[in-house]
Amino acid sequence: MPSNAPTASLLAVLVVGLVLVAALLMSVGRFLPRRFADLAAMGAALAAGGGEVVMLPSALKDRLVYWMAGWEPSGGRTVGIALVGDGLSVGIALLAAVLMLAALTFSWRYFASDSTHFHGLMILFLAGMTGFVFAGDVFTMFVFFELMGVAAYALTGLKSEDPTALHGAINFGIVNSLAAYISLTGVALMYAHTGSLNLAALSVELSGDRSPLVAVTFVLVCTGFLVKGAVSPFHFWLDDAHAVAPSPVCVLFSGVMVELGLYGTARLYWAVFSDTGVASAGQVLFGALGVLTAAMGTVMCFLQRHIKRLLAYSTIAHMGVFMIALGSASGSALAGLAVYALGHAMVKGALFLLSGIILDRYGSVDEFTLQGRGRDAPWLGAAYLVAALALAGTPPFGVGLGKGLTEHALTDAGTVWATVLMIAVSAVTAGAVLRVGARIFLGLGPPPAGLEEAGMSGDEEKIEVSIGRDRVPLSMSGPVAALLGAGLVLGAAPGLSANAEAAAVQFMDRSGYVGAVLGGAVLPVSPAGTAGGWDAPSIVWGFVTATLALGLAAVAVYRHRVPAGARRVLAIAVPALRVLRRTHSGRAGDYVVWMVLGVAACGAVVLV
Image 1 (tube, rainbow, N blue to C red):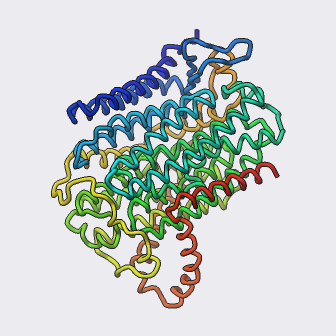
Image 2 (image 1 turned 45 degrees about the vertical axis):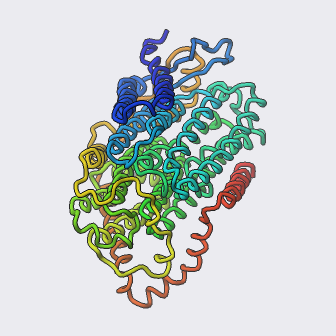
Image 3 (image 1 turned 90 degrees about the horizontal axis):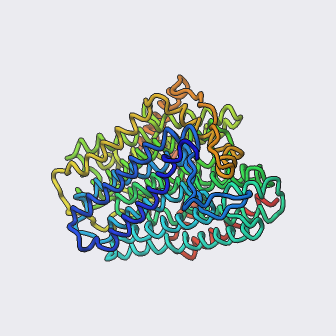
């Protein structure tokens, strides 16, 4: 028995325990006092996070492998269900637990009415995410992926009396469920071709396989993950869902759920397909999708006046950057991405909670409706400004550290254009957030005109709370401060970069994964990372990006003072921007068409 077997057994305890707590809350939650349900849900999230803190040091050294019911592989064949924890998967599970705890704390006094299912759905969501990252076979990944999806659909439509909430939830459910069926078809083809579902066994069976069926399977299975990851052109559901979901739920959507889509894609690629005929084509596909996603998300982010939609498109733009890092197949880039995603989760979570406080206080999340109304809450404006600058990658926040590490790695890999694109994405998306803050908290800028006026208003946001609360409760302001503080601490955490690089190298080590799962022993893991932290270029480019963001925000707010010649040049792009906006029609049928076209295009890239 491996020496870390007791620690590995925590994998099963956490997954099964969370499912049981969710089932209990869903079954009897309506009969429980609201505060009891609050405490039970928060206790479950806290316990999950505590278990993952215990596992993380061991997972960074040796992969944790646990076979359910002791059904270990025999003669190279696998029948049982394996749970596998490495540095990256345990780290993501811990991130999910931390964000869940922040969201539940914020919800303590946030909702105007009690929901009998909210707490059960939240813990079911956490169970799905935790089971997904620990799953050691592709079918178990699918099951927990769907469990996570079902909880997410229900949470999106939690305000069932609001037609827009139901519309967003239905779009979310239709697009993601169809994508799941496509993925399941890929799983079936994979099983028919190899007779295996375990990731390690599949890696052995498919090693060196260059048949077209492998390429088709790769695209089909990844489709569900790319849809959940909001990778363009599979992203259309995301802003509809964020616009109507309660703000605490958006923290989880943008902070960890969409990242899990990328995690699933990366896990499949490196554990199963990195030694097959699609290895190099897969990297090209990731890079191409990343550029498309980053460009589309950045432009759409700047066009929004609905705060939550704006933040949702910012998330999409950052998913594009993350996809580019995946496409580089660089361990250093993946390490930088891990730090970047961690910092992004904290800052974006804080911004969504601030949008909830704005809705609580002023009854709208529309940039123009709220113009100047935030002058009575300077502390709220200060928190919003800090979060926006952190999103730009300003030192010493963790976002800036991750951005700098990723830019370094991509530059070393010879893709300087990717570094330039990252700076542009960060500057424009943070500039959009700063523009909103300047209007709401400083009252700057003229009334909306042209494209701004045509944007979807945030006045339709269904009230989740009582309006006009003069004093924001500590249970709502505390999580904002905690997330911003965590984002700051991450930028200065000793050893974070080196551990992230060790976890990235471990994650990309296909043979090590196979040996740990099928060999019956936990193999020594990759050597400790050597990645550094802040350096002069990272700090300089971080401040340059923040300065660009401030400049873009100023230009947007004072656009009427921009020279007429420059305005005429910018006007050339208006027709194309109107077309881009119309493609985001809010109709599920349109989104399904885009998804089918996307699957076909991905197939063409991989097969040709």
